[in-house]
Each structure stands twice: as structure tokens, then as C-alpha cells.
Image (tube, rainbow, N blue to C red; front, side):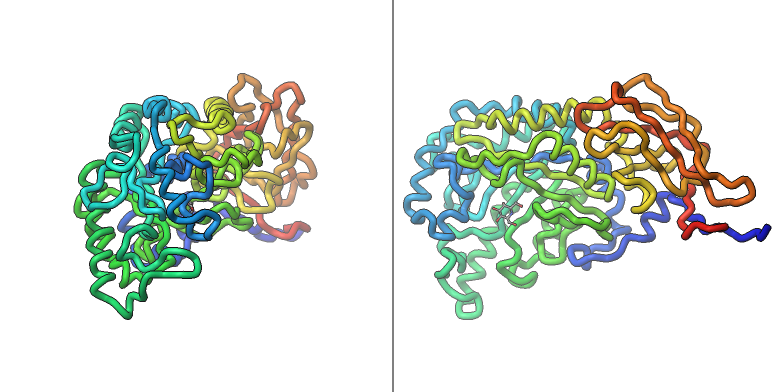
Length: 448
Ligand code: FHN
């Protein structure tokens, strides 16, 4: 018998961190300098995104509908007269978000159409002065989030297609070029930065979610200064990666990464149907099962999910969206132990499905894709399994180790039989307690 050393790799948290690379959005931000403030975000895993604005009056594309000339600008702005917030119940919103299991919420303080949801002093459209809502709709929402212990996020569009000194307007026409009229651009710089300062002073968001940075360079946005001024007011504020290199984390949108992103922190923002804002003609809703599957996959790959809802102009949330959030919440209540405060799981190849680990990597969670029951298999698990529990139940299962050769250090295959009757209506989770931090065999088989 030849005694070869086996190819083992320990999955530990520090090792995972070593694998993380630098990325565009964090080029200017040293990951070590922000690691501490990012912890709540990394542990939260789920956020709820809210696109609420005058576009919900007609139920059309947020801002893009006039930019892309599906409606004239004049007719788009007529929606100001229909934004009532007449049934708005910010505490009910916060409670629903809490029920979903989310740890943070991000609301559109202002979209590309320039209409602010707070009473801006910058002489520009806002729901207090220009709509029948006639009030600051952000303040009571942030207060309700505070009450429920949910972190407060502020989406802020850098683009403002309504502001007379902003160059961009319609898809085929703009007002001017920055290089032709730098003074005019300076006016816009003062304006948008003053609005950011207002939001910062009024609500002190835990998280800034910028959007639209693609229209101008870091220098034109004065991105470094914008970051510094936010952090001067709240040094712990987190800034998303849409500030031309001055953000803290990456924000893939709608399209899901297949291989594990090498980002320090990332968040997939995704709609519940096909649109961000309220769109009654869009009935293409993801099912709770699809949303939970995507959520689990994101978390197992080290990311967060920012799941969007689009309330109506009166402040009610479409029932389909309420349903998705409630089902997600039910699942999280039962299975959330495998999600919140956990770290990405096994590298690909060990298990046909998503996995997560406890921070000390002595607990491995397996998510059974679809409603898989029957025999599942784990490959290359060197660590000994002390216990297997069907999460959210008192059921414990025994593994069967298959194909272990007594004199080889290569581990056998682990088979676990999961009876049909224990399956979760969405995704079943198995909790494997290991004898020590997880150790894996990553070789090519054979004798070593
Ligand atoms: O243009 C916007 C869009 O309307 C929506 O707000 C999304 C949300 O991430 N962001 C922009 C496109 O990237």
C-alpha cells in the first residue's frame, strides 16, 4: 500500500476571505478599512427595495417611460396630481418587511425623474409641495423601520432628468454638454450634493444606494467628495457600488451570477415581477419558490438579495408582492438559522445544491434543490458528521458512508435519506453538525 498524502482543503472563514479579490467598485476603498462597518450588512442577507414615486399613478415605467418617449414629459409629470398616499401606512410596510425576515430596506428617495419623496428645500419637485400627498412620506417610514429594528437605506438617483441644469433629458436629446458649459454643470453639482446633504441630515441613512452613475465620470460627480461628506455625518454609513469607484459593495442587477463572485460584498437587486415600480399590466410574478431558490443561491455564494416591491400611488402594496414577502418570511422563520449570520458554503462539486456554513465552519447547511427528498449525496467530506437535523423540525437522520476504503485517506461518499414526509413546501434544509471545522477532499479520486 502506497501512503500518499491526500489533497485536503480546510474551509475556514479566514481562508474564504483570502480568496476575495479587489473589484471595480472597491478600487478606492480598502476592504480592511470597512470590514467592521460591513458586518451587519454581510449578516443581514435580505433587504427589501421599494420603488415608490409618481410613476405608480399611471402604473408605467419609473422615469424611463418619458426618457424613452413612451409618454411625453408633460403627461408624465401630470402624475404629480394623482400621487395621494391616501392609504399609506408606513408601520404596516415596516412590519411586512420585518415579517419577510429582511434586515434592511432601501426606498427611492428620488428616482431619475427628479421627484423627491421628502420636502427638499432645493426648489425642485417633491411630494410635499407638488402632490396631493402633501407630506414627507420618508420620515414616518424611517421611524417605523427604526421601531422594528430594520436598517434604513436611501436610494438616490444621481441622474435628475427634470432638473433644468442637468444635461441629460430624453433618450435622443440632452440640454447641453458638460464640457461646453462647466458653470452650468457646477450648478447641478451644488444642487444634487445639497439634496444628499438634506437626506443625510434629516434621516442619517445606514445605507446609501446611488444609481445612475454611468452618465458621468467620478470627477464630474465629485464622487470622492460625495463619499467623504456622507461619512463625515455618519462614518458607519455603507455606500453601494454605484458611485464610480467610491462605493463599498457590488450591485449586480436582475442577472444572477453563475460562478461565485470574487467580491468582498455584493447584493443582487431583483424585481418580484418584471418591473421596479407598480405596473398593473405586469403579472409575470416570480413564485415564492423561485424567490426562495434565488435567495438561497445568492446567500450560498456570499451575497445579499435586495428584493423589490412597487407600491401603488395610495401607498398600498400589491397583494402578489405581499404574498411573496409573507411566504419568504414563513420560510425564513423555519429555516433562517441556515441563512442569517452565515457564510458561503462548500465550493462547487461537493453537493448538487446550495450550502452555507456557520462562521466557525463546524455546521454545514445543505439546501435541497426544489423539493428533493430521497437520497442525497455529499462528496469529499473528511469531517465526521455528529448529527443531522431537518431544520425547523425535531427530526434527526443518520448518514450512510459509501465506498470508504479503510486504508485510504480519501473519504467515502455521504448519502442521506430524506423521507418525503419531512420535506419543506419550498426548500428543505439539513443541518450537519461536524466534529471540527469542515475539512474537504478535493482530489481526483483513485488511491489518494
Ligand atoms: O434605471 C434604474 C431602474 O429604473 C431601477 O431603479 C434600477 C434598480 O436597480 N436601477 C436603474 C438601472 O440600473
